Structure formats: structure tokens, C-alpha cells
Image 1 (cartoon, rainbow, N blue to C red):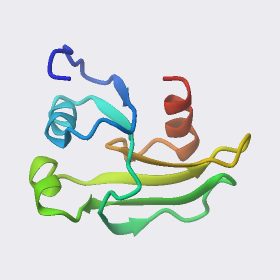
Image 2: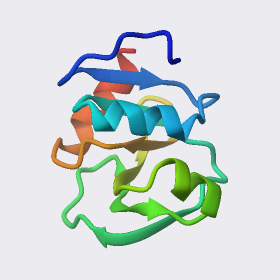
Image 3: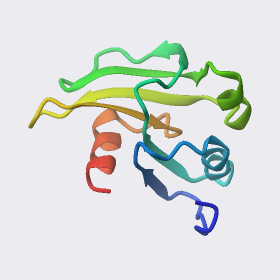
Length: 113
């Protein structure tokens, strides 16, 4: 979505079909945030995990992409979260560059997209 004029400090939410990691890196470089629903086959190399997760969060890790092309397009650290929707049990995988927000906030941003 290069036609969007990105703004610093704003969250941009993308669905699972969006995998332009170079554009996500552009969002990161200007100081904005993104939340993207990742495909199940995303290759991610975790470096550290958050402990004491909320009830509906299965995993919350910070790391980088494990595949060369993805890592080349997005060379910085990002966060991968796996959450369960409490209403229907659907499992969601999110990628975000917001390393400080709590998991519920990230899931709620995606839910309200």
C-alpha cells in the first residue's frame, strides 16, 4: 500500500493476504506501527519470549524472519503473537513492530480494524 501517506505514531492494520514486508519496514522506519495477521507458514526465529501471558494468548515472542528474502525486506526485530478468540476458539497469528504494547491491545486493534 505505498499510496497511503503514512504518519508517525499511527497503527496500520492489515489482513492475512498482505505480505509486503518491504512496505511494512517503511512503516517501521517512519515511526508508525503495524499489525498484520500472518499466514500460518510464516518462518520466524524467536529470540525471547514474554512470560505470564494473558488467558487467551498462546505465545508472544520477539525475533526476526528466518527466510532470507523476508529478512532482507524487513531486517529489524518484530513480534509474533498467537492468540485464541474467546468467542469461537479461532487461532490468530499476528506480526507487529509494536514491541511494548500488551497482547490484548494488539488483538483488540486487529479485531476493530
